[in-house]
Image 1 (spheres, rainbow, N blue to C red):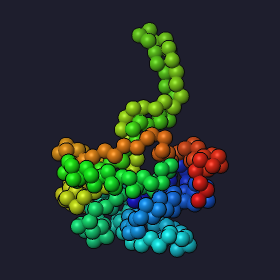
Image 2 (image 1 turned 60 degrees about the horizontal axis):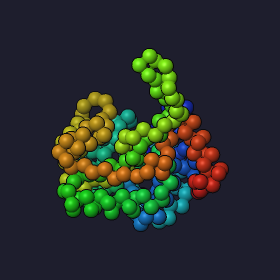
Image 3 (image 1 turned 120 degrees about the vertical axis):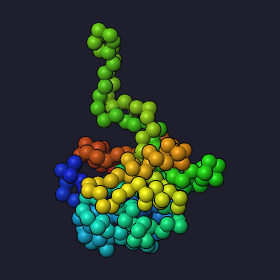
Image 4 (image 1 turned 180 degrees about the vertical axis):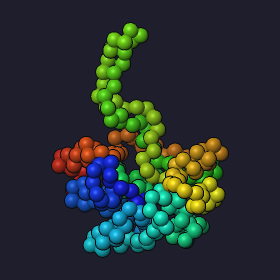
Length: 243
């Protein structure tokens, strides 16, 4: 999913083209998947797609096969983009799909490999149609305080870990899940449609979604300049490779 903007960060580029170290988030995401044996990629384009196309002409993606899918209208959001790709045949309705957002950083380079194995086991054991990769807790971006009944602060904590299973922008879908996209998302309805709102709750209500849990500090969300600066510091410290 490469249609996102970086406008919340004040940057006039597709979010996937933000650089951390010497390469973009998009290249880091593709490299992580190719290192796990994935080779067939479908890029769901949107915002400033020509810039992404030009960028991809000049990078070595390790033999990855790239197919582009384009929004029929700008701003249709993720759910409509996936439905359009299904209608156009850019996503094969007969094959499993691993959906990822090249928006964030993952410190476990073998995550896609482990996730798809755990997902396949859950399909066999529980008959699920989809999995969401989730962090076991979320690093809260602000400081918090704890107060007694009088309002007196008894403890304060900066950026605590909140024990909530938090989606990290990775999903795996079996072919039966595609019917939910086709049935629940209306391309003619005005405005965006997010599959996290239209599709995932329905799968969860029917017991067809599985949670693949990862440690919280192996995922770094990049939604603000502050978070981007944190990622750059990790590159400088050697915790994240430059390339």
